[in-house]
Image (cartoon, rainbow, N blue to C red; front, top):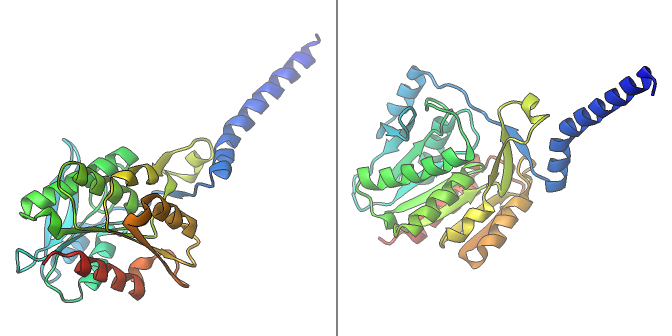
Length: 284
């Protein structure tokens, strides 16, 4: 075989390998119909964090989740120690604490409720970097710490989650149930049944990155669960909400918010529905 033929064959093989490597993530995403997003991690300045803490009734919270990583959060304690609490797990948001605080205040709407939100690893002022396993286990620690440090009964604690936060919430609520600490309710807004998170679009071109799968976690989640999804959501298709509802079956109520897009945190219909969920599920 002539030298140029050998070189040509080698180049063809190398080219085919390159195409296969580059094309694999694209083909897998097309087959699975799995959406992918870039982690929206960004720092929160000390002054901005202090401003959130300074809002009436709010306090700074910190949770050590490993030897090197701590999560920063916000807590608003109720006057009545028997009052319900609402814990919020944010989505892939560059302003998790600010957005979570605003959402919680809107749901509370002047009621004497306890409120809490923590920024995930790598988000806002929290250390580390997110991953499916770390976010899930951190969610469990958030619930356990809140129950213990605030002396809350599990039946007082309600959970709400948005988008990617649905994965974290499902794992945390399921684990609480398995350890005989069944929580009061779970509300999922625009949640993902399956999604891929990437550190950069460049990496996403050559590799499948962090895959978050909520459906396998739902078998351990008890009723009552409220699932809300925008009818005009183009970020996370409403089919994902339907998949979650189907897996939970009669443990959940599924509601489509007509005309609503992805960010149900600003939608009055969704906010009213979460408030009603807390009030109807509260034992007191």
